[in-house]
Image (tube, rainbow, N blue to C red; front, side, top):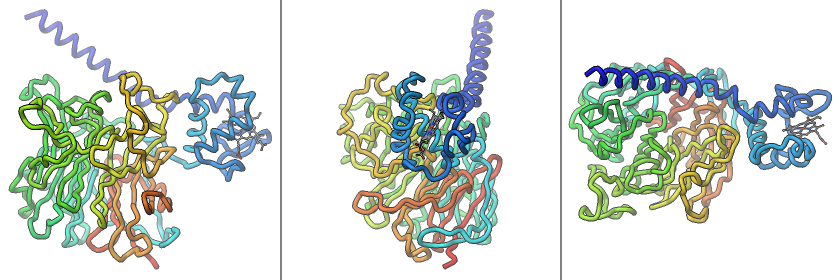
Length: 503
Ligand code: HEC
């Protein structure tokens, strides 16, 4: 017995050290960021450590003579400073990393920790087509992730670490709804974000909710011991149920995967966003909750968007569907609709066509808005506009031996570099902001910005920042009253906001 105790104690100590080292690595990452260090040592003497310029070099935060897109900045650095770049002997993508560093500073994208500070602007916010005010509907509990406005004006709210509740028409948040799947509390808070194993994720109404009352929720289902794992493991699961007063009833599991696909990776990258198309098919995004090589293995659920019927039946026209006798019983390939996604933290359908659109969080740079196509390969981790956080090219795909041509992947309709950390998105519909009709309203976490994007014929024709410095936007939804509802998270609490036009 004694040797067993020694092994267990040994494992525990190793585990504690590994977790401690992991936290230390994440917490101190900003301070070790190579392009920032390179800028301070090679550029700050003329452009200033704060980029505001000195008598030897211009301010890089104001309008630049040679443009300020990442591409233009790369060209300027090469054009103005060829000797410097040659002398510094930068590893190849450092010039791009410097360009990203400058554009991040220009866009005032705060650090992840600072992005938890929020400010609700007072007075009128001016934008290109509409001016509006931002009203606080209510403060909410910690870790808010999603909302679903009900036709009667109440709003369903999901807090990752608490669960489902209902906000009434006077803005009062009710008690937690009883009987939903269990929400586990956070294990730790890293740079203001919760690390959770067993989080509540999205909430979405059935397209015919008014007649059938079905509410869909995604959550990260957790198990331990009962699924043969000594430590807790989780995986995205979709359930549906109805509200009877404050109770969750008629509960059914709609989409789930074999327990051997559950992983110990925290739910920050679980995604779990839900949407329905015009034919009533449901979709759920599953982040890369494993090693990245699995993103291109159809038998695993990770880094995919899955498609199912509203009652949980599997459509046999799904692109990788196989009959039972051909398929590994633990495979989740039959629901795969698209793959090669990194972390699709946003999903919505176009009210005009039912087309499914998703956001994608890139690494450093390379956030995307994608139109989701049947069987589509979205390229991660082999192709991305972004760089690694250590100012190097992303080589994960090559290292894993992934091999497919760029032409086989579906490029994003919108690229966001530098990356704002895009979250959920919604098409604007209803009459309250007529000049935004059918535009995408897109939230972001780190950049704290609400974007408006107009897409026509598959191309971006307008891209505007409606509000910045608002807070970490987790969800954007159209209310039944036609106003825009925005859910923001900030540390221990969150806020539900409403955009109301003034003109
Ligand atoms: C010795 C001083 C000096 C150093 C060091 C220096 N710069 Fe410059 N930089 C300048 C000057 C001066 C200009 C303006 C050149 C001009 O307008 O002809 C400039 C221009 C630029 C521009 C274009 C600005 C615009 O308006 O389009 C960028 C971008 C830039 N520098 C980035 C960098 C980066 C990145 C580094 C470090 C790798 C760096 N610079 C190092 C002096 C410096």
